[in-house]
Image 1 (cartoon, protein in one colour):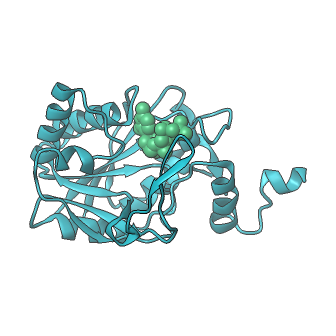
Image 2: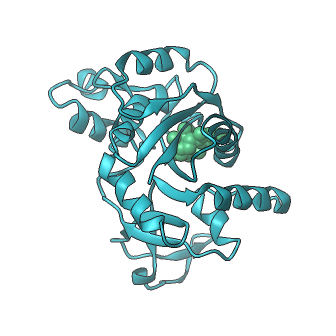
Length: 239
Ligand code: CTP
Ligand code: MG
């Protein structure tokens, strides 16, 4: 079973606060987008990798093409939209147009640049029966529902999981979910939430806690330690 993967890199990275989008930020001489795309391209189940990018990605894409080692095929990038969901919609349209033989798609946040090929294998395997799957990890902190600085309640954390990517879907199911969300004016922060709204079954598989999303400057420092040990991070040079 083969799938295409959309690597979402069109966000602005406001919480990271760098001068460029976070997918363009380099760790150990390689962009965050390239770390994700090159790792996913090594998964046996991935036949095509399609980057979804924002403005100013030309240099990063050129470097990615030069470094490309496959075995999956790197498709020309497409321009994302104003929201993650719009970026998924643009990417999916392009994937269907360029690789119409595919039945399955994975959607991955480029910002999860510690992703491994086995993350793709595991989630696609999990999705085969139901048509939709995502990796999850346990919540380890106690959860509080808070409003206006006051605790309303303490939900049982055993019932909650943290959602990661890559998430896997039958292409027709994700398309239907995107169309329905657009009709309803619903905006989700992941693709699973759109499919859940259809009443379809989404199954979970075991995620890896190390597959974190680069979001804050602290995440960047930790990732630099992991992906480029020995290269001092900018923060420590300045300190
Ligand atoms: N993303 C995208 N298109 C958008 C918004 C987000 O492709 N319009 C991508 C990001 O590039 C990222 C992933 O979706 O890889 C997860 O989004 P998030 O972590 O929120 O990234 P940003 O939106 O870039 O960051 P921030 O919210 O801090 O601005
Ligand atoms: Mg965002």
